[in-house]
Length: 516
Image (cartoon, rainbow, N blue to C red; front, side):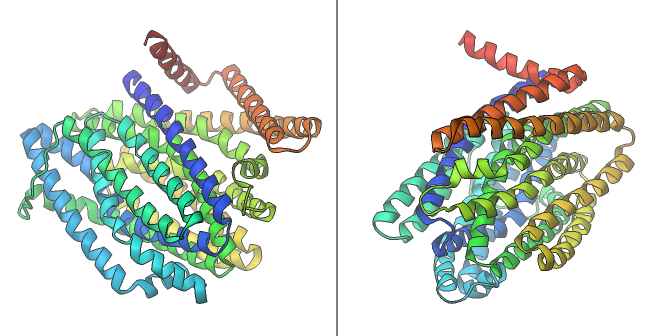
């Protein structure tokens, strides 16, 4: 677990830099276009290719790693590489078909994602979407390169792909303000291409060699199709839910669509930093453990991963809920992004961050099932939770408006978590789940105390320092820092085992840097 922990921390450090740059990118976008027509049209058009491919991309990303490890163990590296090339070429063909169909039926596609759009915002979104649809191909190739590098234990480069992406988009925003909004759209297309191109030299260094071959009769392709199909269905249903969320949001106004987009980006910052960073490292290891029939080690790895994620995310969720308004204000409120936009985005963020704990633990359990070559169980559980999400969306939007959409997402996440827990327990038996509950209880209690303290410290310091962006940053920074210290002191007193693992991970990285 020591090597895995160090790799996870290394990826976190890289992700911090990449995602902080991503937040700066969102600040540029918010200041330039606020929550107006262009911001709403751009966020919708930019989201459509991601949603279209994620159905296939998620299936590939989760299925490639265990299948590659299996083929490599059974038949050698070249056999696994041939399979990867077949997969890449099939993905290119599928993505080109998706892009072509999307360009033909762009208007109904946009109306599906944003049923409330009419007039100029609809025409603008259609125009943006036609340009960005080709990016589906780039997203697909980038996903496969990421999976290949993770198989080869290179987690840093996939964590860095957001850096060229952010720089290109920030440059595009700057130029678009002085020329034409379409500079931003074409710049985004180039930025997405860079996510793929950035990884290619490093994949070649690790031994990847491309070949234009498609072996349709490859038995491994038939096997992965059996594995992928339930994932495609499960992710497809999930994307239907996401489409409904955004479509309902579009009926409440373009400002609501843009606010959801900004809140999602802040949510994804935490998700990428902790969930993706840890799972990117742990998932290939879990797959290898099962290839070697080491179920006991698999259970330990699964439990410790859940505990570490709970330990890290519970305080973040509660802290972000308590300090949502000042967080959004400091990060986004400038230029065209107003105080009203801050309040709306903060309200959405509160519910999203509460739900992130459930989503994170579900992701760990889902990867556990995929490592066991069981994609049917996550599919069934995912469908049930998504049905709840859709029903809750339709009910809560009538009473709570846009807040109802965010609340429905959080509630359905915990419904899904309960389903996943019982399914996992049935699948692998006892994995000392009582230790997970114990860590969760300690973390919630510690986080609630931290939340109260952080809120009090923020109010006291902000009243003492007064208004102004520098003073607001200082107030927020002091309250977050003090809250983190309080939380970890309480958890240390409560003797949480995983806290020691986190401390050892950090210490090892600090020592490594000093030695350098």
